[in-house]
Length: 220
Image (cartoon, rainbow, N blue to C red):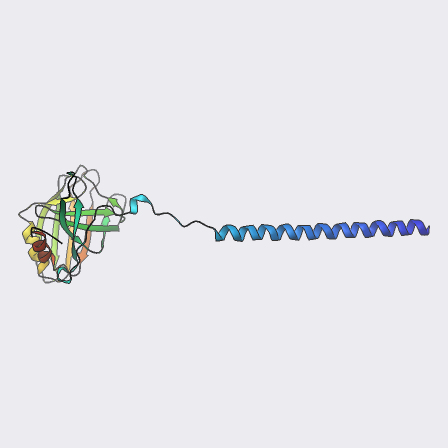
């Protein structure tokens, strides 16, 4: 009887030891998994910038306090030589809102592109999607100053920007030079997707000086 009793004790002891080994192994596996998780988090690769977010058009910028919010930039020539096409644009983003059949006062980003021959306004829905030509014939544009001046004219979206006729450009520049906040309101005559756009410019002065600099023979 004593021999059987001792055998039972020995079997019980071995089972307890085996259980301890499994518990220790389980703790080791959990610790190993946790260590690998920390290493994986620490080695996370930085997010790559999407190609469409890289600004490719501006290759030269000429900052100047006398130009206010405006700067002179350039497009590289497509003629295969070293000549550049210079233009004046806003040095910081202009934000506003737009509304159409699918959106109500959604985010709008505005970019001016003015050179010796053209005065253009580029509209970007949600700050990134360029509004291109649709079925509309024209855009009606109103600019109102905080002093009560009102300027009305039309523009056409020929490709991906609104082109303003040469006769209206000097009037716009004169209004900009007076300073003070300007409120813009644009509306399309599109039948498929009529839309309105609104934005403000707080201090538009300086455009005339930038345009005079643009007209010089060489810009350094």
